[in-house]
Length: 81
Image (cartoon, rainbow, N blue to C red):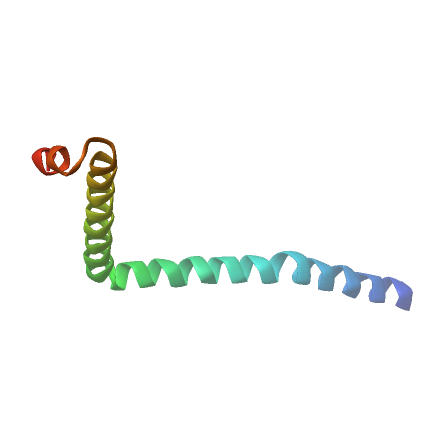
């Protein structure tokens, strides 16, 4: 076995580590972190999702009122909502 073969083997091992192992460790660590954050803060996440849902619903309701107001006038918009 020649020294060039050993060096080539180390280069191959480094490429496998650099291109496969390190990205897999990074992705699995990120998945683990996100999973733990979601599990630990699930109550807060549900609360803020509920708040955002209500805000979006309110904005859509006001947008519908404004469209009806522009098309049919204030009386029709007030009558519908």
